[in-house]
Image (cartoon, rainbow, N blue to C red):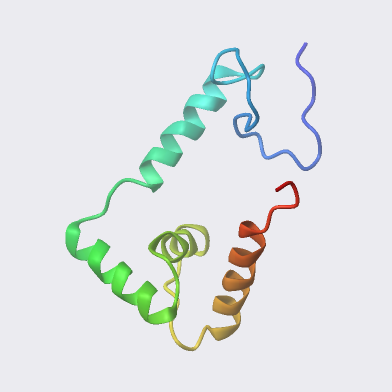
Length: 102
């Protein structure tokens, strides 16, 4: 019988180093479904869409990845009127760079 995932677990594949199969100790189907969803979400858009996103991201002071993640997660394009959300993303960027182990 498989173990029940913790309350905060999202059912995705393991993120730590593991020598076993890529899906870890869980169900291979769940791993493959997550992999397919990830590949579909990050499929390269057309050249024109990519350039448009890059221009908008630079205008807002974000990276292309930050801007694209915002579209994928929240389903909307950021603009100048979303200053609070842009500030929040910049703060998160600073936290990611900081490492307490170095």
